[in-house]
Length: 294
Image 1 (cartoon, helix red, strand yellow):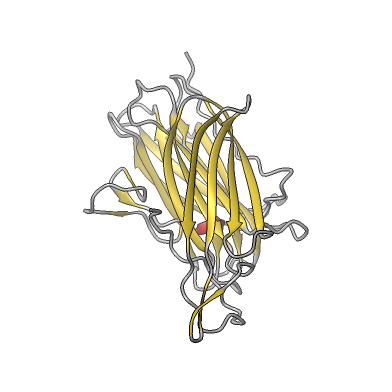
Image 2 (cartoon, helix red, strand yellow):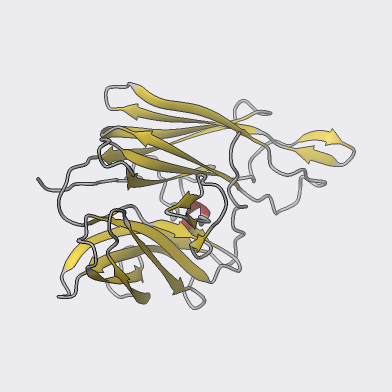
């Protein structure tokens, strides 16, 4: 029986493309899927990373020259028949500002990690401004999660703002396979972020197999590589094989790009390939680091 693991993040009708100038959403919904650590359990682990722009939020007076905004984000995972298998509301408040006319109102991000059975879903994020009822935004991401057994396959590729590093802290939503992951929220590499880092997992590769990891950055419709990199790895035994890498973005101009990561064996045969999108914008400010929602 062949192994199939698919996480299709189609950003179509809602105009979620970061390059769209006509449909700018306040909410960015990033989703990454991984195989369940217990392979006997049918389903997957889905990491939901939400980024909310701070520019259009309503700020209320909290004291003399002190202003603060607040918003709710309701997350839902809905089957194609309309059945909700997951729902949760998260409330966040940006830092207090002394001047609401300030141009710098950093976005806020948070991350949730949930388990989903095999199936087809719509992941939805519904943002509501607590101080202005008309200020709402809804984004949806179709997701297909299917499992089997068979050939090697990559998980989703997670874009990072820092290298994946070993952590001695207690396991939480920001750690996978003992590595601490700091996301590049919304796939944005902004001012001061001249390095791209990524993390992925490879499943079902024969233990001890020598692997070559190749990755490249291209414009969405480009045929030439903007920058490339490669690394070597050895297939792990009894657990996923960690795949990491980095690219220098210091000479990459502003724009939208796709990052492709491929795994090859010692015979130079492609075992698996995965692609994700990102934006390079040195003139913008990156979102603040994600927080653990309460």
